[in-house]
Every structure is written in C-alpha cells, then in structure tokens.
Image 1: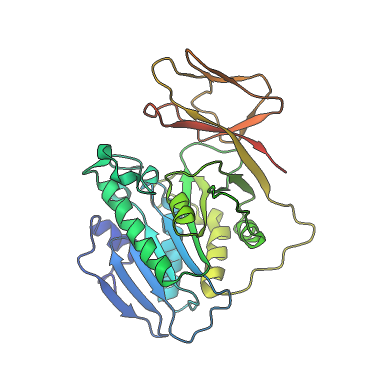
Image 2: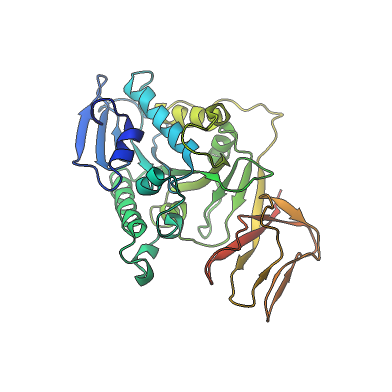
Length: 339
C-alpha cells in the first residue's frame, strides 16, 4: 500500500517527520488516485468521469499545531474509510498534516508558531533556518499548485483544537478579505459540522486560512473543535459533526435539509486587537479565562504607559488571550456579537 506494511497515513507521517522518502502514487480499486507528495501531504483525485455535483475542490488541514491531535485523528480515520472502500471520492482534495515534527514531539511547535508564518511571513530573517519556516513554504507551494490545477470553488478548512477552555466549544474564524461576505452554503456547512459560532476577522493575517483566502481566493476557515489532548485520548464521538460534514463534501453529496426552526449561527466581529506593546504593557485578564468570556462596559482590559483600553458601551468578549507572546505579537482579540 502507499504507506508501507502496517502503516496508515498518520503512522507513516510520524515515521517520516521531515520528508517522505519518495513521492508515491497508487490507484484504488475504484480508480481513485492517491499521491503522497511529501510527509503529511496527500493529494486525492477521483477517477475521470466520476460526477462532482458540487463542482468544488477541498483543502483540509490539521496538525498545524502538533499537539492538536483530534482533528488529525478525524482526517486519518476518513482516509482509512476511503482506502477501505466504504465510500467513493467525488472531488479533488488535498489533505494536510501540518507540522509532523511537532506532532511526533507532542508539542504545539518546535521553534516558532507555524500558524504565524503564512502569506510569506516565513521569509522574514528572524525565522531563517527554523523547520516551521520551511514547512510553511512547502505548504504554500502545495496549495498554490492545487488551486492552479483546480481553480474553481476551492474551499479550505484548517482544523484545530484549543489550549484553553471555551464557553463556545466549537467555533470558526473567517479570514478578512476586503468586500466579501460569507456564502450561505458555508454557514450551512458549519452548522452541519456542529460549529454554531463564527468570528469575522478584521484584517489580513499570517495564518494558513488567511493565506488561502487572500492569495488563492478560497473560501477558508480556521475551525476550532474542542480541547487539546494527546494522541489516543480523544473522544472522537465529540467530533462526529465535522467528520460527517467533511465525508459528505468529499463524496459530493447534497447538504442535509435544515429544520426551519433551527437556531442560526451566532456571529461575532473583532472590535480590538490586543498587542504586547513592550515593558510597560499590563494585561488585566486572568491566565485561566475561557474564550468568549464577556466583560462589562468600562472594564479595563490592558494598559501601558501611553494607552488604556476599556470595554466600550456594550459588553465585549475575549478570545485567544495569551500574555506570554513576544513584543509586537497578539495577546488576544476583543469581540462583540453582530447578530
């Protein structure tokens, strides 16, 4: 088989953490092609002539942070089903396990946060010779080649789990692109995946999803699906929503009908980005606070010798609070609901 005796995609990736020994191509009994392009980088192509009713191509990534293991296991399980002949592929897909070295080490990253190195940020001198910088370049190149080959209706879902608790367990971030609105079909997909909260980002970033949105024109999302746990300790029953939704998309099936009385997705927008401003910076949010914790008007969130940020006239929430970042990097985002 494509991964060698006794190995599946995940175990092969953990034994080939830097580069696959060689590019391999196999064809399944139904004519589906699998091309192992590099470690953790797998291209899937249905046989010529098989209908692709939704006329789309998918990029699905996990493991951009190596210790976020549940989405990795979900992707690996879906691929095992495909190889076992349990269902047939209808659309071209690029499946990505983002940071194999960090996955093998059970760490978020080796030297630097991979999800801050896209959109060309990996070329900055301070990241030279770091393995994550080379990995970001490789993933960008692979996605560009995929999008060039399949230019229509490319969607990218970058799957994560969170270090800290969240009052909204599953939520998605929609990267900022000037002048665009999120399509209703993408909202329906998120709800199908049991992701009931959406955060609209306020500016272009250096995340993987931001790169694929801005440069490739893809409909891209960073999807947070729960809590960080080591390999083998995830309750994959908590991830059936995303597994079922992705399987349905890969099979090219129509989305399920939504109940008319079903609750709509809750949408938040960013109102302020907190940055570490240097020696006088003070962050007044506790280290153990959960994502989406709300603060009343007038609450002081951070200050330094020149600036004090307080919550405005309506309550604001916080996501991704982390005081332990270098000067100039993001400490957290202040958000509020839009509808």
